[in-house]
Image (cartoon, rainbow, N blue to C red):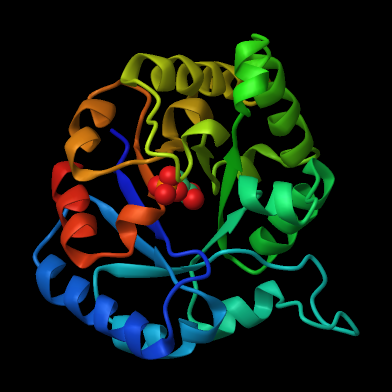
Length: 251
Ligand code: PEP
């Protein structure tokens, strides 16, 4: 039985003060919640304060990206060791916005996954097709290519420490959610791919999240599907009321 995950991707939103207000409210309201892993991924600037507040709470901290080198002359970048040092346990990698606006490739995602795993961070590796790709019936080819690239040369043990997020690009921030059937079809494809390339056990244990306009009203129906183990939530994670409801609907 896979424990569900609800992860909030705050993207480039919230000052430190705003971030702490939201985190305090989540902490208060979710303190008794069990049976779901709750993760928040604030911007880098709020990680340190967030980490202090979340210490000993049931809410885990994640970052939204990382660089693959451990240190050196890489102006503007943040290393996996630094994220670990600040208290992160998770890191979102290969988000479609990074692929689109920052030209991130599958090869870069692969290097970032390896670096993250080497310091004990859990990568949340995002894959997903664009609307054009879906309409051209290339969804499975795209997902396969992204998985092959991002997971290249990872051992079975590495894979067992990952979380994968299926995020159809056309559903992110658009208000259009994949139907449970559409989402499940791809989740099942991912799980079958994992079974073929690693093992049945690995494929059954790995958690696959859905992301793309998740809100309180559609969480339950998505989570009812066999292979959907939770959600990566963007817009609806920025308000405590909606994020709390999503978490409660995931149990
Ligand atoms: C995301 O950015 O990962 C995401 C799923 O965003 P939204 O929930 O706003 O579609």
